[in-house]
Length: 213
Image (tube, rainbow, N blue to C red; front, side, top):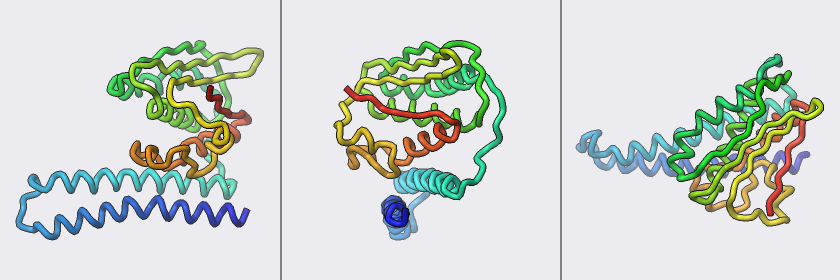
């Protein structure tokens, strides 16, 4: 547990160093061109804005995991229509899916009731869908299914992309773990999304797994 915490702190520090370095460099460029207009320096300002957003998301994710580690209650539980929650999340991703030249094929069983943290479930769907888009081949389908059978709810997302090596399958839910670190960083990932998804699912009494073939 101690070694895991040490590694977590080291990884978090490493992830924060990169955006901070980019922000500092771009600020130096702005300071070196004080007589230029804001419009002419828009490129550097955009870089700063992008890195600030990335760092903000990372800090929020770290705070969320810190709360989990301290066993803090994360949201109230209530009964809600999980079919509607998932459908609304899918619709919110339509533009991103279109922009990435991907098709969405879904089969959502209607009016499934679920007792749990609605915002947490919403977050899980968003994380898994975002992950599927980032690691999908262009022109392929992402298939989303939700079904209830004998009181057990199964939610799945299938995409067509590079096969995950067998030795990585049991590690992808670890914090900061990425199969291809350079490509994940290019796509804006920190390696915390799947870890957060696993945490939420397990707190709801479920389990999460990945199959790659």
